[in-house]
Image (tube, rainbow, N blue to C red; front, side):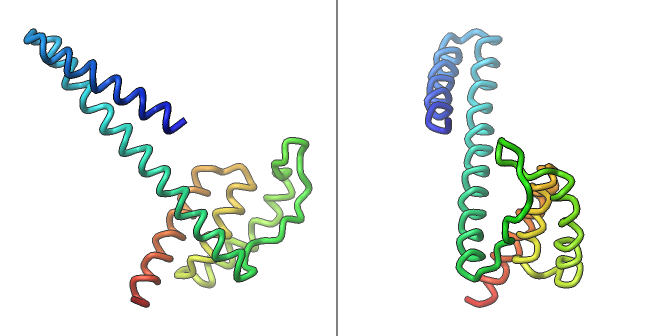
Length: 142
């Protein structure tokens, strides 16, 4: 999808240049708007790809340490955990973060618990906090 969107952005950029070359006021304004939108889209795509790469790195680190939660929850046919079962496990991960708020590992597991409970917004926020803490820890070690 990112490649298709990149192609689309190139075509939009081309159209923007063509509109601005007409010399007409409205066409120039539309061309400028079309130039700004691809940069915003590229920034958003880059941010999401970076988020994915960083979370993948943390998953590998936790897995190597044996720190990933064991998947024992009952699942739907789609593979998603049953929400009630995930909600029952959630307090354990929340308590872990409350006990060690500077632990990227605790925040990462909390993010996974939010995701299993179906709360994507909080899951992403917890994972972003985990990434922030991991990076701060890595900088402190360097």
